[in-house]
Length: 341
Image 1 (cartoon, rainbow, N blue to C red):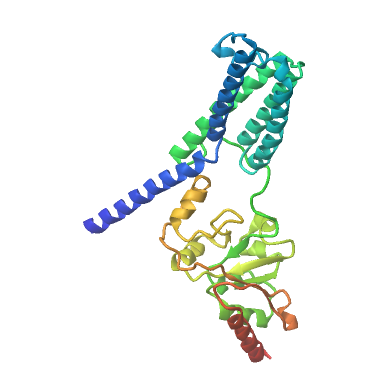
Image 2: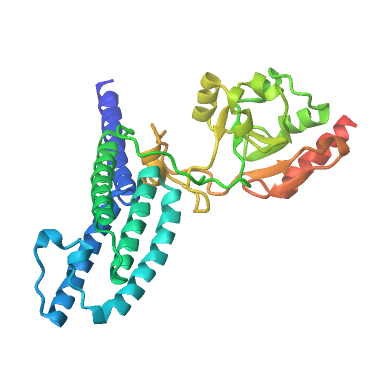
């Protein structure tokens, strides 16, 4: 028992270490600390501008503390055209950064928005119409956001939870055409909700569950009885929902304890599937409260998705062929249909 307990403790410590290191990389490279570094790059760029301008005009800068102040860059008026073109280019590039930040969080978006205003200030300076108080205010806000973002990113990563709020993303990562499905532990759990399914649909489900087949059925109030509750509009589409019974013992036991679970794939939308819990931690660890570590996944191919909304008309459609071949699914359907008839 002592050896077993020691082994379990070592495994738990190893998992925590991996979660912290992998999660830190995911957080650090996706949070405002990166834009704090970018702010330093911009500062260095402005220093180069100032040195270049000083060499051209023989006018020395008034102090290092004023390097970021546009009105003290001492840019030669003869070079205004080139710096104006550069400012416009920065404006365009930063718009794309703002779009990317919209998918992350509110702090990151605010930081890029303030950066856009700062670039506008620099553009106004090259046009000799810069309101200095505006630039001072924007620089102050930019500095505060950099410090807040870096501190929040580091603290949230170290403690494994969102201690310092970063704000939600304004754009959804998951496309609308990829609705969220529901996992149940067994068909009896579904029967308890009393959905108005035909005998053919029930028999078909009994033959494909559990396993790598998901059945799309029509939505109804029975979903609320099943345990979806207020999440009714968040799962599936407006008219349908995909239901699957996994063949993993631990997952089934978990669903027995919690009731139906809304499930998505453990990877950012559009990226390759996560086939090991290390991949889940490195990609999504900073968004998750916990990860059930089970090593390498036995399923390296997605599930097969079957549209059963017209099954009573004698027809099903394979929307996606996955780990269960479409031919096998159709064979099961034809056999069940002949038995029912």
